[in-house]
Structures are given as C-alpha cells and as structure tokens.
Amino acid sequence: MLDMRRTIYTLIGLLLTLIPASAIAQPTASLSGIITYREQIALPADALVTLQIAEVTSQGTGGRVVVEQTFTTNGAQPPFRFNLAYNPALIDAGRVYTLQGRIQSGGRTLFSTNTLIPVITGNAPRTDIQVVMAATASTSLPAAGSELWLIGVALGLGCIGGIVHGIRRRIR
Image 1 (cartoon, rainbow, N blue to C red):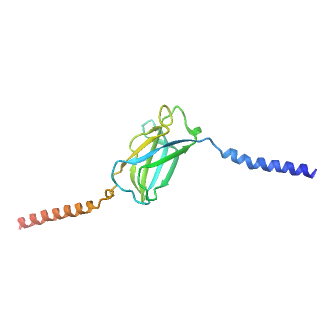
Image 2 (tube, one colour):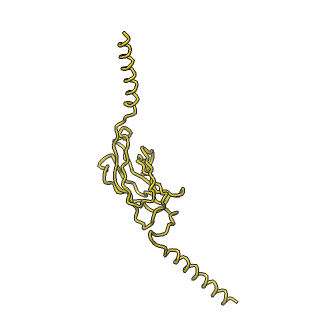
C-alpha cells in the first residue's frame, strides 16, 4: 500500500513537472541575414542594434511589433549577422510583415531602416536578408579611421574668420 502511494505521488509529481514545460514550449521559426550601412562611420563601443518584425499597416508603415531583439556590438563593426526567432502562431498569412531596425548609442539613433523589408509571408525571404540601414539626421560621427574632419573644421573656421576680418577692415 505504501509503495502504491509512492508510485502515485511520483507520477503526479512527474506530470506536474512536465506540464509547465509543455505549456511554455512554442514552435519557433527564424529570420537570418546581415545588417550593415553604407556610410564609412565607426560605431561607438556601446552601440545597440535592435531588430523587429512588425505587421505592415494600411499606410505602408511598420505597425504591431511581433518580436523584438536587441544586442550590443561590444565595439564590433558591421556587418553583423543576425538570427531573429519568432513564434509562427503570431503570423497571419494574409498580412504583410516587415523587418525594421535601428542602431543607437547614448540614447541617440545613429542608423535605422528607412524602407520596408518584406519578410515571412508571400514570397518574402526568411534567410539571407540584407538589412541596409541609413544614417539619421543626428548622426555626426567622424569617418572611420579619419581625423581629417577636425582639420577641415578648423580650416573652415579660419577662412570664415579671415573673411570677417577683411570685411571689417574695409568698412572702417
């Protein structure tokens, strides 16, 4: 009788252990590809890359976000490989989805996607996706490997100062 109870309790404990694991386990699919940008600008070491799969709205923009993934570059420079997992149960085959992203540093967005990148539904790709981001208006980092920008600014200011000085002399 005691052995029968132990067996029953053991089976109940085993079932209770397995139920949450099966409830959490969801089928997954993924998108993979490369993230880059055209500008010759080095990223700061603390740059964060964020990718999202979003449902495209009737206005043709990204809407409801299905999944988001963020990773730090740790000083690495593009191109960055990505593998973005998502739950296919959240995808409606009759809708259009886009992959959108941004690169941020210090709370500023340096680069972002500025075009729709169709993914998942229809004939849209799921692998070898090329995400080419564009610099935002607030991006003002020096060109990678170049300190000449500082010399250019100094020369430009010097020229402006010379012109102003010449105008002042002629006015007097």
